[in-house]
Image (cartoon, rainbow, N blue to C red):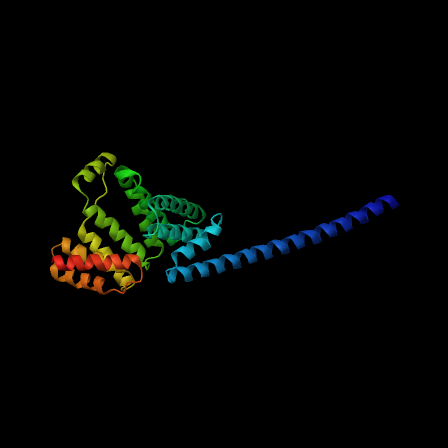
Length: 267
């Protein structure tokens, strides 16, 4: 009996130790999760500051340290940073290709982690489109509906995101001006090939401007170009002048200014 009592007490003691151990584990785990969450928030805050400052290389260096992250918010930002680095004139052709494919991998992983994020859908679509530039016109056209679907999903999740609306406009513009030989390829690939009109593109570019006025030099430029396609010189002059006068913060802004000036001189 004494032996059984000893065992019983030992069992209670072990149970107590196990319970304390379990509680300690829970506490440590919770602390680790909270700490990890704070770290993710800090990284995102730093990343958004660098992005806003146009520090493309520093931003990429910060985020590439988190390439194994399971957080969709980190991953889509890394996809964007990889793509932005690829766009720099100082990036070699070989580096650009590698970065474009890397960006798609990060975007794909972000989509697996969170399908409810408008930014994830937006950057996944952008990255698929970029990769198409290396895989030929057939792949690019074959991906067209996938790209459109993700832009539409991004707009559905956040109707006020001007960039997603603008990109949907670019999709429409691209298919409105598709050359005849590409249309033939599209007709072979799809029973109902993707198509659009300049009027539809114009609606999206205006919607983007309504969502966030003067948010992007390229939206102003494309409004001007679309009006040119529709033979509305008065409106084309208005928007191309806005694009020309837009403050140039990035390399892309400078290219937009240059193109706007050339187009204004041609009218």
